[in-house]
Length: 67
Image 1 (cartoon, rainbow, N blue to C red):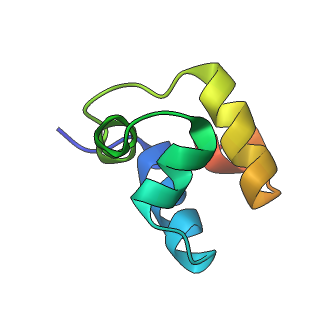
Image 2 (cartoon, rainbow, N blue to C red):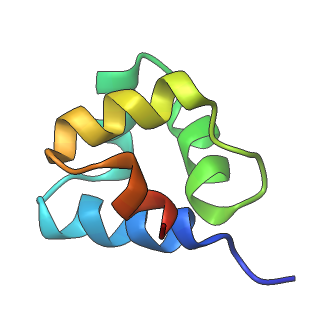
Image 3 (cartoon, rainbow, N blue to C red):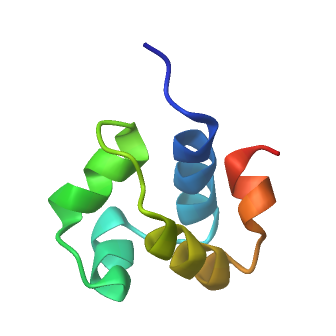
């Protein structure tokens, strides 16, 4: 099973912006373990968190979702 496109893009965005998973989890007010599951594709990312992440990275949801 391959990872959804958004998982790969979120990891690249996080790293290129100098954040750790723990940093992003703290900003989103979730546990690091939960964020890791979103980034690895184990769980689907809720839309409200996608919106917050787009604001953090100053990018569009279309870009993150690969549209």
